[in-house]
Structures are given as C-alpha cells and as structure tokens.
Image (tube, rainbow, N blue to C red; front, side, top):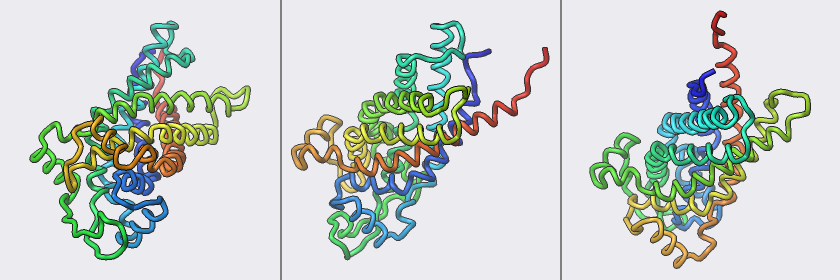
Length: 305
C-alpha cells in the first residue's frame, strides 16, 4: 500500500466547503470584533451588522472562501494524513499503524506550516471583504459612522488592488502571525480529535460513528480556535490593516500597539465567538471529511489478484 493517497485531499475539500458554509456568519462577527473597530460586545456587533447590512452582511466575502478555503482545507487534511502515513511507514513499517501522540504532533505542525502558503492570501482577501461596511449615519460605531468607500468589488478585484499597491508581500501580510497561530493550533486540533474519537467510540467498534466524529470534531474545533485567539487577533489586525489605514509594521509592532492602547484583554477579543464558531464549523468539517473519505474508499475498485 502506498503511503501517499489523493483521496484525503478530495475529502478535505468537501469538509472545508461544509465548514465555510456553517462557520462564515460567526467568522464575520469575529473578524469585525478583532479588528478593533469599536463594536464593543459580541451582541452589539451582531445587531449592528444586521441593522446596517441585514442578513447578507454576515455572508459578506463568502464566495471566495467557499472555493479557496475548501482548497486550503484539502491541503491541510491531505498533508496531515499523508505525513502520518509516511511517519508510520518509517517508524513502524506500516502506513496503517496507529500513530503515537508525537506522530500526530509532527504531522499537525507540518500541515500548519505548509497550509499558510495558501491560507495566508485566502484569509487576507476574506478579511478585507468582511471589513467593508456601507456608509451610514446611524449607530454608535466610529468605524461605520464615517462614509467608507467600498474599495473592493469582489475577490479578484481585491487581489489585483493589493498586488498593485502592496506587491506580493501584501498578499502575505499577516502570514508570520498565521504561522504562530496555526502550528500550535493544528496540534490542538488534530490531537484532541484523535483522542476524543477513540474515547467516545464504544469498545468493540473498529471505526468511530458519525456521532463520535461530529462530537470529537466540534470539541477539538472549540479547543483549537479558543486557544488560538490571541494570535488570531494579531493576524486579523495585520490583514485588516490597509482597508482604511496602514498602522502596523509587523507582528511585534501590532502586539505592542494593541497592548499599549487596549490592554491585555484585546488579545482575547472574540474568544467566545471563536470557541462557539469552532464547534459547529469543525464538527461539520470533520464529519463531511470522514463521510466523504469513506464513500471514496468504498467506491475504489480493488485490483485483481
């Protein structure tokens, strides 16, 4: 049996699409809160978006991540699973051998590092589109009380403007913070998932049930996104920077300025939304991934002996 398999990439794409559809509305709220535009509480942010932009405001910028994050998720799951197989092949002599916690950690870190190459630009465009708000003269949010020109007409126009004004480096703005978020973040994503799947699955069952996958994926997502919030705040601020003004020089400058102006609590802004959003998004993602993988492997034609 080959250590490398493409079906993990295909199933990862399906899981990523499901996760985006479920998680995007709360992702928009999280982005607005973390960017520090004066919304205050989570509830006030939700009500302000609904009052000024209606339901469509929560799905702003979703078309691009629906395609691109599906590809990004395909890379994450594909790299993670195939790295595990390579490790198992070399350490235990079989790609099917049950991995140790250290194996899961290494595969998670590799997936986190590789994924930033695709995830950085995807997150940047998503956040730039999410941060655009229509001109309004009502409400008490400083950012949206000022007439704001809708700078980006869509994902392609957004990318072209960023390349024109900021160059290639602009597309990867915030990638340093994303690496610092995702390398430990994926360890706290895949390791709890594997542990919980095994723990929830009754003895005597060779594979976890749909419920086990859904529950384990949801809890793992809440843990991962909740603990990743401080660096996610920094990443969101760096990537949102440039919509109205450029004020951060890099990761350390963003951390210093944010702490100086708003205190330690700023790094936990959106932690509740992150954790709540992490459950349904990751539950849908893992369940769709596992079901797709099962269907793909069932349909594979076994070679004749």
